[in-house]
Length: 205
Image 1 (tube, helix red, strand yellow):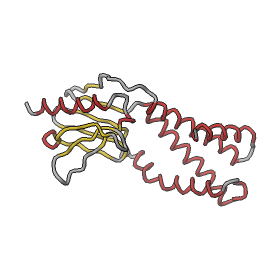
Image 2 (image 1 turned 90 degrees about the vertical axis):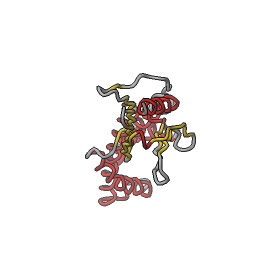
Image 3 (image 1 turned 30 degrees about the horizontal axis):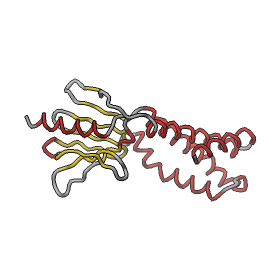
Image 4 (image 1 turned 120 degrees about the vertical axis):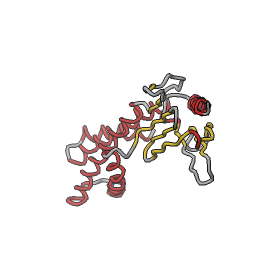
């Protein structure tokens, strides 16, 4: 509801106003629309069993749908642009801002996201992808990028508490179990668990 409210308010402000801040509200409307598209893709899209992309070596690749990931990236870029405008207004004429506190929070938040944005443009921020290969399992998502041979994987199970998804059970007391968020994928968690179990069984043959 907050996303829809921001979308409506942003559009009204952009149409009714003629100042730089009013026009920047159109950017907030665009951000809200993009986030809404991503949320619909992640939470409303029906999850059903699908055949993944299969590579030449037999690896089975499950990747987050484009409608879940790319609108978020686009919204992020627009937020940075709006924050830059508001930052300029804060420096030149803070009186133009109706809610300077909110504007400052957004500017600070945008500045705080710049390290991750640098990771994005340098290829170190990842689209959620689970690759079930003949020799190893690879999970990439946001800042996580792990590849483990099957001998180090005990299995996988559905993880129902925040975030809901699939927990990959690693061997060793010091190993951290990655959690694959199911909201990022268009297949049910049970299918991913079965894929991991089948690949482990084949690797032991």
